[in-house]
Amino acid sequence: MSKYTTTFEIHVHGNVPLREEVTFEQIQDALRSVWMYAGARSLSEGADSFYEEEPGIRFDENEHLLQMCWTIKGEDDFRQALDDMCMGLNDLTLSGAALEVTFYDSEFDEEDEAQGRDSRDDFLMLFVGPTPAAIMQVQRDLLVQDLVNLMERHFDASELSEVVLEVDKLFSKRFDSLVSSLEISKPPRGSGGSGGAGHGGRRPRHLH
Image 1 (cartoon, rainbow, N blue to C red):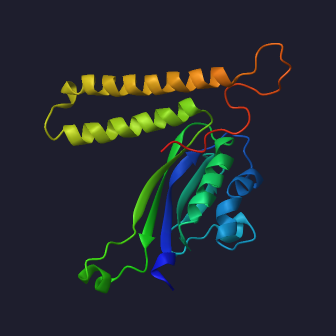
Image 2: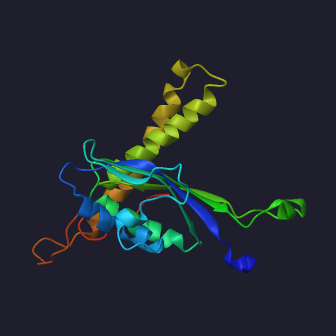
Image 3: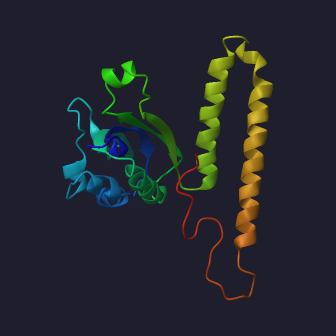
């Protein structure tokens, strides 16, 4: 296989809170792009991870929670399947959630390292949620957590309130800009247009 078609081990990890009325069939449809990529004919068939010790893709009906700790062999084009999955999950979510995705370059070996070559490992965070506000809330919480963990090495937690406040200001500006853009996209009143405001139609897949 050519180095230009590097194979990855791709690990998807995270928990997504779902609405109470969501069914397994709806989840199966939302995740269609990823289990089909795995060559499965259904979610049940494709839910097992490449590694037996990982739980794979599981739906906890009692907790209304989609749990993912799942590894698949794939190429860089798996990113499109992830985008489609996020689009499908948005409509099923109860609140915002983050998914961690790690691409491990499975062809990178000791010889490559010895010759100074770089692996093509990659990491990304995907966000899903019922609204952009819910997605932004998750992004904000993760950023605050990372900043506090970093700065607590040098400052007391009580000294970091102003830092958190500034983060909140930045996200407030981003949210206001989003609301403004949605307002501009509304059809004029009385125009007879059927387009809705907010989240009618195609929603953002996820915010990086």
